[in-house]
Length: 404
Image (cartoon, rainbow, N blue to C red; front, top):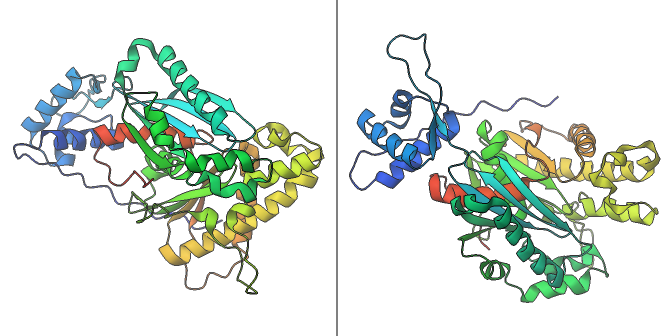
Protein backbone atom coordinates (compact mmCIF):
# COMPACT_ATOMS: atom_id res chain seq x y z
CA UNK A 1 0.00 0.00 0.00
CA UNK A 2 1.13 3.54 -0.69
CA UNK A 3 1.67 6.00 2.13
CA UNK A 4 -1.36 7.93 3.27
CA UNK A 5 -1.85 11.55 2.23
CA UNK A 6 -0.78 14.12 4.80
CA UNK A 7 -3.71 15.75 6.61
CA UNK A 8 -4.44 19.18 5.07
CA UNK A 9 -4.39 22.36 7.04
CA UNK A 10 -7.80 23.85 7.79
CA UNK A 11 -8.42 26.67 5.28
CA UNK A 12 -8.37 30.14 6.84
CA UNK A 13 -11.27 32.15 5.48
CA UNK A 14 -11.16 35.71 6.73
CA UNK A 15 -13.82 38.27 5.93
CA UNK A 16 -13.79 42.04 6.39
CA UNK A 17 -16.03 44.33 8.41
CA UNK A 18 -15.16 47.33 6.24
CA UNK A 19 -17.89 49.10 4.29
CA UNK A 20 -18.22 48.06 0.65
CA UNK A 21 -17.25 44.43 1.34
CA UNK A 22 -20.77 43.02 1.50
CA UNK A 23 -20.47 40.72 -1.51
CA UNK A 24 -17.05 39.45 -0.49
CA UNK A 25 -18.24 38.73 3.04
CA UNK A 26 -21.30 36.89 1.72
CA UNK A 27 -19.09 34.72 -0.49
CA UNK A 28 -16.71 34.05 2.40
CA UNK A 29 -19.56 33.00 4.64
CA UNK A 30 -21.10 30.74 1.97
CA UNK A 31 -17.70 29.12 1.43
CA UNK A 32 -17.40 28.47 5.16
CA UNK A 33 -20.83 26.83 5.22
CA UNK A 34 -19.98 24.77 2.13
CA UNK A 35 -16.78 23.46 3.70
CA UNK A 36 -17.91 23.09 7.33
CA UNK A 37 -21.72 23.16 7.48
CA UNK A 38 -24.18 22.60 8.97
CA UNK A 39 -22.78 25.23 11.30
CA UNK A 40 -24.25 27.72 13.82
CA UNK A 41 -23.84 31.48 13.43
CA UNK A 42 -21.49 31.75 16.41
CA UNK A 43 -19.11 29.24 14.84
CA UNK A 44 -19.34 31.07 11.51
CA UNK A 45 -18.24 34.29 13.20
CA UNK A 46 -15.21 32.57 14.75
CA UNK A 47 -14.31 30.80 11.52
CA UNK A 48 -14.55 33.85 9.24
CA UNK A 49 -13.35 36.37 11.89
CA UNK A 50 -16.35 38.55 11.08
CA UNK A 51 -18.24 40.24 13.89
CA UNK A 52 -21.32 38.52 15.27
CA UNK A 53 -23.46 41.42 14.08
CA UNK A 54 -22.07 41.24 10.53
CA UNK A 55 -22.64 37.48 10.37
CA UNK A 56 -26.18 37.95 11.64
CA UNK A 57 -27.01 40.49 8.94
CA UNK A 58 -25.48 38.36 6.18
CA UNK A 59 -27.26 35.22 7.35
CA UNK A 60 -30.63 36.99 7.33
CA UNK A 61 -30.06 38.20 3.76
CA UNK A 62 -29.01 34.74 2.59
CA UNK A 63 -32.02 33.15 4.29
CA UNK A 64 -34.30 35.67 2.56
CA UNK A 65 -32.68 34.79 -0.79
CA UNK A 66 -33.16 31.04 -0.08
CA UNK A 67 -29.42 30.40 -0.36
CA UNK A 68 -29.20 29.19 3.26
CA UNK A 69 -31.58 27.06 5.27
CA UNK A 70 -31.98 26.41 8.99
CA UNK A 71 -31.67 23.00 10.59
CA UNK A 72 -33.10 21.62 13.84
CA UNK A 73 -32.02 23.39 17.03
CA UNK A 74 -29.06 21.77 18.77
CA UNK A 75 -29.87 21.21 22.45
CA UNK A 76 -28.01 19.65 25.33
CA UNK A 77 -25.02 22.04 25.32
CA UNK A 78 -24.16 24.92 27.64
CA UNK A 79 -25.96 28.16 26.78
CA UNK A 80 -28.83 28.84 24.41
CA UNK A 81 -29.74 26.17 21.81
CA UNK A 82 -28.04 26.92 18.49
CA UNK A 83 -29.47 26.57 14.99
CA UNK A 84 -27.15 25.03 12.38
CA UNK A 85 -27.13 26.64 8.94
CA UNK A 86 -26.52 24.82 5.67
CA UNK A 87 -26.67 25.55 1.97
CA UNK A 88 -30.16 25.35 0.49
CA UNK A 89 -29.78 22.88 -2.40
CA UNK A 90 -32.63 24.60 -4.27
CA UNK A 91 -31.21 28.09 -3.82
CA UNK A 92 -29.42 28.11 -7.18
CA UNK A 93 -28.45 25.75 -9.97
CA UNK A 94 -25.62 25.42 -12.47
CA UNK A 95 -25.92 23.83 -15.90
CA UNK A 96 -22.97 21.81 -17.17
CA UNK A 97 -22.48 20.96 -20.84
CA UNK A 98 -19.79 18.42 -21.68
CA UNK A 99 -18.94 17.98 -25.36
CA UNK A 100 -16.86 14.85 -25.83
CA UNK A 101 -15.38 12.87 -28.66
CA UNK A 102 -18.03 10.14 -28.35
CA UNK A 103 -20.90 11.73 -26.42
CA UNK A 104 -22.52 14.94 -25.21
CA UNK A 105 -23.94 15.38 -21.71
CA UNK A 106 -25.97 18.11 -20.03
CA UNK A 107 -26.23 18.14 -16.26
CA UNK A 108 -27.91 20.34 -13.68
CA UNK A 109 -26.22 20.61 -10.28
CA UNK A 110 -27.85 22.16 -7.23
CA UNK A 111 -26.37 24.72 -4.84
CA UNK A 112 -24.95 21.92 -2.68
CA UNK A 113 -23.04 20.53 -5.68
CA UNK A 114 -25.20 17.46 -6.26
CA UNK A 115 -26.36 16.24 -9.67
CA UNK A 116 -30.12 16.68 -10.03
CA UNK A 117 -30.75 15.94 -13.73
CA UNK A 118 -28.78 14.84 -16.77
CA UNK A 119 -29.30 14.24 -20.47
CA UNK A 120 -26.97 12.44 -22.88
CA UNK A 121 -26.55 11.94 -26.62
CA UNK A 122 -24.07 9.47 -28.15
CA UNK A 123 -22.42 9.53 -31.56
CA UNK A 124 -19.68 7.63 -33.40
CA UNK A 125 -17.66 10.74 -34.26
CA UNK A 126 -17.97 14.34 -33.03
CA UNK A 127 -19.21 15.87 -36.27
CA UNK A 128 -20.32 19.49 -35.62
CA UNK A 129 -23.29 18.87 -37.92
CA UNK A 130 -24.46 16.30 -35.36
CA UNK A 131 -23.11 17.75 -32.11
CA UNK A 132 -24.38 21.33 -32.41
CA UNK A 133 -28.06 20.38 -33.04
CA UNK A 134 -27.83 17.89 -30.15
CA UNK A 135 -26.47 20.66 -27.94
CA UNK A 136 -29.47 22.84 -28.76
CA UNK A 137 -31.83 19.90 -28.21
CA UNK A 138 -30.33 19.24 -24.79
CA UNK A 139 -30.69 22.87 -23.74
CA UNK A 140 -34.37 22.80 -24.70
CA UNK A 141 -34.84 19.58 -22.75
CA UNK A 142 -33.16 21.06 -19.67
CA UNK A 143 -35.30 24.17 -19.67
CA UNK A 144 -38.49 22.16 -20.22
CA UNK A 145 -37.61 19.73 -17.44
CA UNK A 146 -36.73 22.44 -14.93
CA UNK A 147 -39.82 24.57 -15.55
CA UNK A 148 -40.26 27.43 -13.08
CA UNK A 149 -36.98 26.55 -11.36
CA UNK A 150 -35.12 27.53 -14.53
CA UNK A 151 -35.00 31.12 -13.25
CA UNK A 152 -32.56 29.93 -10.56
CA UNK A 153 -30.04 28.55 -13.10
CA UNK A 154 -27.19 31.07 -12.87
CA UNK A 155 -25.07 30.04 -15.85
CA UNK A 156 -23.65 27.34 -18.12
CA UNK A 157 -20.25 25.74 -17.70
CA UNK A 158 -18.96 24.35 -20.99
CA UNK A 159 -16.46 21.50 -20.76
CA UNK A 160 -14.80 20.37 -24.00
CA UNK A 161 -11.43 19.18 -25.31
CA UNK A 162 -8.96 21.76 -26.56
CA UNK A 163 -8.14 21.47 -30.26
CA UNK A 164 -10.50 18.61 -31.05
CA UNK A 165 -9.45 18.81 -34.71
CA UNK A 166 -5.86 17.98 -33.79
CA UNK A 167 -6.50 14.36 -32.80
CA UNK A 168 -7.54 12.87 -36.16
CA UNK A 169 -4.37 10.75 -36.36
CA UNK A 170 -5.22 9.13 -33.02
CA UNK A 171 -8.93 8.50 -33.65
CA UNK A 172 -8.40 7.14 -37.16
CA UNK A 173 -9.27 7.91 -40.77
CA UNK A 174 -13.03 7.51 -40.31
CA UNK A 175 -13.14 10.30 -37.72
CA UNK A 176 -10.77 12.64 -39.56
CA UNK A 177 -13.34 14.47 -41.77
CA UNK A 178 -15.62 15.17 -38.79
CA UNK A 179 -12.76 16.31 -36.56
CA UNK A 180 -11.34 18.65 -39.21
CA UNK A 181 -14.56 20.70 -39.15
CA UNK A 182 -13.89 21.80 -35.56
CA UNK A 183 -11.05 24.05 -36.71
CA UNK A 184 -13.74 26.49 -37.93
CA UNK A 185 -16.13 26.18 -34.96
CA UNK A 186 -16.20 28.54 -31.96
CA UNK A 187 -18.05 26.31 -29.53
CA UNK A 188 -18.52 29.01 -26.89
CA UNK A 189 -20.14 31.35 -29.43
CA UNK A 190 -22.32 28.53 -30.73
CA UNK A 191 -23.55 27.90 -27.20
CA UNK A 192 -24.28 31.58 -26.64
CA UNK A 193 -26.52 31.54 -29.71
CA UNK A 194 -28.84 29.15 -27.87
CA UNK A 195 -28.95 30.62 -24.36
CA UNK A 196 -28.87 34.06 -22.70
CA UNK A 197 -27.20 32.55 -19.63
CA UNK A 198 -23.56 33.45 -18.88
CA UNK A 199 -21.16 30.89 -20.35
CA UNK A 200 -17.87 29.78 -18.75
CA UNK A 201 -15.39 27.44 -20.43
CA UNK A 202 -12.95 24.83 -19.09
CA UNK A 203 -11.02 22.04 -20.72
CA UNK A 204 -13.04 18.84 -20.19
CA UNK A 205 -10.59 16.96 -17.99
CA UNK A 206 -9.89 20.14 -16.01
CA UNK A 207 -13.63 20.50 -15.42
CA UNK A 208 -13.59 16.92 -14.09
CA UNK A 209 -10.76 17.95 -11.77
CA UNK A 210 -12.91 20.88 -10.56
CA UNK A 211 -15.64 18.37 -9.63
CA UNK A 212 -13.12 16.26 -7.70
CA UNK A 213 -11.71 19.38 -6.01
CA UNK A 214 -15.08 20.62 -4.75
CA UNK A 215 -17.07 17.41 -4.31
CA UNK A 216 -14.46 14.68 -3.93
CA UNK A 217 -11.00 14.19 -2.46
CA UNK A 218 -10.26 17.90 -2.78
CA UNK A 219 -12.11 18.45 0.49
CA UNK A 220 -9.31 16.64 2.35
CA UNK A 221 -6.30 16.52 0.01
CA UNK A 222 -4.50 19.78 -0.76
CA UNK A 223 -2.02 18.68 -3.46
CA UNK A 224 -2.90 16.10 -6.09
CA UNK A 225 -2.61 15.21 -9.74
CA UNK A 226 -5.94 14.22 -11.24
CA UNK A 227 -6.18 11.66 -14.05
CA UNK A 228 -9.41 11.01 -15.97
CA UNK A 229 -9.56 7.97 -18.26
CA UNK A 230 -12.17 8.68 -20.92
CA UNK A 231 -12.05 8.33 -24.68
CA UNK A 232 -8.68 10.06 -24.22
CA UNK A 233 -6.83 10.27 -20.92
CA UNK A 234 -6.34 13.75 -19.49
CA UNK A 235 -6.00 15.48 -16.17
CA UNK A 236 -5.73 18.48 -13.93
CA UNK A 237 -3.51 19.74 -11.15
CA UNK A 238 -4.39 20.97 -7.65
CA UNK A 239 -1.75 22.56 -5.44
CA UNK A 240 -2.47 24.18 -2.09
CA UNK A 241 -6.16 23.43 -2.51
CA UNK A 242 -6.41 25.48 -5.73
CA UNK A 243 -6.58 24.56 -9.40
CA UNK A 244 -3.34 25.34 -11.23
CA UNK A 245 -3.79 26.00 -14.92
CA UNK A 246 -0.57 27.60 -16.18
CA UNK A 247 -0.26 30.49 -18.65
CA UNK A 248 -1.56 28.39 -21.58
CA UNK A 249 -4.12 26.40 -19.59
CA UNK A 250 -2.10 23.20 -19.98
CA UNK A 251 -0.99 22.43 -16.42
CA UNK A 252 -1.95 18.84 -15.67
CA UNK A 253 -2.19 17.96 -19.38
CA UNK A 254 -0.91 14.45 -18.71
CA UNK A 255 -2.24 13.05 -22.00
CA UNK A 256 0.70 14.70 -23.76
CA UNK A 257 3.38 13.19 -21.50
CA UNK A 258 5.99 11.22 -23.52
CA UNK A 259 6.30 7.56 -22.65
CA UNK A 260 9.93 7.10 -23.73
CA UNK A 261 13.11 8.90 -24.76
CA UNK A 262 13.70 9.88 -28.37
CA UNK A 263 15.92 7.15 -29.82
CA UNK A 264 16.45 8.59 -33.31
CA UNK A 265 15.96 11.93 -35.04
CA UNK A 266 13.13 10.60 -37.23
CA UNK A 267 11.12 8.96 -34.42
CA UNK A 268 8.82 10.43 -31.81
CA UNK A 269 7.86 8.45 -28.69
CA UNK A 270 4.20 7.77 -27.97
CA UNK A 271 2.30 10.02 -25.58
CA UNK A 272 0.28 8.81 -22.60
CA UNK A 273 -3.00 9.32 -24.47
CA UNK A 274 -1.85 6.74 -27.02
CA UNK A 275 -1.46 3.99 -24.40
CA UNK A 276 -3.85 4.78 -21.52
CA UNK A 277 -7.04 6.00 -23.22
CA UNK A 278 -10.35 4.24 -23.56
CA UNK A 279 -10.04 4.70 -27.29
CA UNK A 280 -7.42 1.94 -27.57
CA UNK A 281 -9.70 -0.48 -25.73
CA UNK A 282 -12.61 0.42 -28.00
CA UNK A 283 -10.52 -0.24 -31.11
CA UNK A 284 -9.27 -3.56 -29.75
CA UNK A 285 -12.81 -4.67 -28.94
CA UNK A 286 -14.01 -3.66 -32.39
CA UNK A 287 -11.10 -5.46 -34.07
CA UNK A 288 -12.06 -8.60 -32.15
CA UNK A 289 -15.63 -8.46 -33.43
CA UNK A 290 -17.06 -7.23 -30.13
CA UNK A 291 -19.13 -4.22 -29.13
CA UNK A 292 -16.76 -1.26 -28.87
CA UNK A 293 -18.87 0.23 -26.04
CA UNK A 294 -18.35 -2.75 -23.70
CA UNK A 295 -15.88 -0.72 -21.64
CA UNK A 296 -18.77 1.17 -20.05
CA UNK A 297 -20.69 -2.00 -19.09
CA UNK A 298 -20.34 -4.74 -16.47
CA UNK A 299 -19.77 -7.29 -19.23
CA UNK A 300 -16.31 -5.88 -19.90
CA UNK A 301 -14.96 -7.91 -16.97
CA UNK A 302 -16.30 -11.24 -18.27
CA UNK A 303 -13.62 -13.89 -18.80
CA UNK A 304 -14.41 -14.08 -22.52
CA UNK A 305 -13.04 -10.54 -23.00
CA UNK A 306 -9.84 -11.01 -20.99
CA UNK A 307 -7.77 -11.47 -24.16
CA UNK A 308 -8.53 -7.83 -25.04
CA UNK A 309 -8.96 -6.27 -21.60
CA UNK A 310 -5.82 -7.56 -19.91
CA UNK A 311 -3.33 -6.25 -22.51
CA UNK A 312 -5.05 -2.85 -22.39
CA UNK A 313 -4.97 -2.80 -18.59
CA UNK A 314 -1.28 -3.66 -18.59
CA UNK A 315 -0.25 -0.94 -21.03
CA UNK A 316 -2.59 1.68 -19.52
CA UNK A 317 -1.42 0.96 -15.96
CA UNK A 318 2.22 1.11 -17.06
CA UNK A 319 1.64 4.54 -18.60
CA UNK A 320 -0.26 5.90 -15.59
CA UNK A 321 2.43 4.63 -13.23
CA UNK A 322 5.18 6.37 -15.22
CA UNK A 323 3.16 9.59 -15.21
CA UNK A 324 2.65 9.24 -11.43
CA UNK A 325 6.36 8.95 -10.70
CA UNK A 326 7.33 11.76 -13.08
CA UNK A 327 4.73 14.13 -11.66
CA UNK A 328 5.70 13.33 -8.08
CA UNK A 329 9.34 14.15 -8.80
CA UNK A 330 8.29 17.59 -10.05
CA UNK A 331 5.54 18.54 -7.61
CA UNK A 332 5.90 16.53 -4.38
CA UNK A 333 2.27 15.37 -4.48
CA UNK A 334 0.14 14.17 -1.59
CA UNK A 335 -1.93 11.99 -3.91
CA UNK A 336 -2.75 10.96 -7.46
CA UNK A 337 -6.49 10.64 -8.06
CA UNK A 338 -7.69 8.41 -10.90
CA UNK A 339 -11.25 8.49 -12.23
CA UNK A 340 -12.90 7.87 -15.57
CA UNK A 341 -15.91 7.17 -17.72
CA UNK A 342 -15.04 3.47 -18.00
CA UNK A 343 -17.07 0.98 -15.94
CA UNK A 344 -16.30 1.13 -12.20
CA UNK A 345 -15.13 -2.50 -12.11
CA UNK A 346 -12.75 -1.86 -14.98
CA UNK A 347 -11.52 1.24 -13.16
CA UNK A 348 -10.92 -0.88 -10.04
CA UNK A 349 -8.81 -3.27 -12.08
CA UNK A 350 -6.88 -0.36 -13.60
CA UNK A 351 -6.25 1.13 -10.15
CA UNK A 352 -4.92 -2.20 -8.85
CA UNK A 353 -2.57 -2.70 -11.79
CA UNK A 354 -1.38 0.91 -11.65
CA UNK A 355 -0.51 0.60 -7.97
CA UNK A 356 1.39 -2.61 -8.74
CA UNK A 357 3.23 -0.90 -11.61
CA UNK A 358 4.17 2.09 -9.44
CA UNK A 359 6.05 -0.21 -7.06
CA UNK A 360 8.35 -1.29 -9.89
CA UNK A 361 9.92 2.19 -10.00
CA UNK A 362 12.75 3.44 -7.82
CA UNK A 363 11.61 5.98 -5.23
CA UNK A 364 14.88 7.11 -3.68
CA UNK A 365 14.62 10.83 -2.93
CA UNK A 366 10.83 10.84 -3.35
CA UNK A 367 7.83 10.23 -1.12
CA UNK A 368 5.18 8.02 -2.67
CA UNK A 369 1.82 9.73 -3.01
CA UNK A 370 -1.41 7.97 -2.11
CA UNK A 371 -3.15 6.49 -5.14
CA UNK A 372 -6.85 7.33 -4.73
CA UNK A 373 -9.87 6.39 -6.77
CA UNK A 374 -11.94 9.42 -7.79
CA UNK A 375 -15.22 9.98 -5.97
CA UNK A 376 -17.25 11.60 -8.75
CA UNK A 377 -17.16 9.10 -11.61
CA UNK A 378 -18.33 9.25 -15.21
CA UNK A 379 -20.29 12.51 -14.76
CA UNK A 380 -17.24 14.42 -13.49
CA UNK A 381 -16.70 16.52 -16.64
CA UNK A 382 -20.32 17.70 -16.86
CA UNK A 383 -20.59 18.17 -13.09
CA UNK A 384 -17.42 20.24 -13.06
CA UNK A 385 -18.92 22.38 -15.81
CA UNK A 386 -22.08 22.90 -13.77
CA UNK A 387 -20.07 23.93 -10.71
CA UNK A 388 -18.16 26.67 -12.56
CA UNK A 389 -20.99 29.25 -12.75
CA UNK A 390 -22.09 28.47 -9.18
CA UNK A 391 -18.64 29.08 -7.76
CA UNK A 392 -18.05 32.09 -9.96
CA UNK A 393 -21.16 33.79 -8.60
CA UNK A 394 -21.33 32.65 -5.00
CA UNK A 395 -17.98 31.41 -3.71
CA UNK A 396 -14.56 33.09 -3.44
CA UNK A 397 -12.67 30.22 -5.07
CA UNK A 398 -9.65 31.31 -7.09
CA UNK A 399 -8.47 30.21 -10.53
CA UNK A 400 -11.02 27.51 -11.35
CA UNK A 401 -11.40 28.73 -14.94
CA UNK A 402 -8.94 27.69 -17.59
CA UNK A 403 -7.96 29.62 -20.70
CA UNK A 404 -9.79 28.69 -23.88
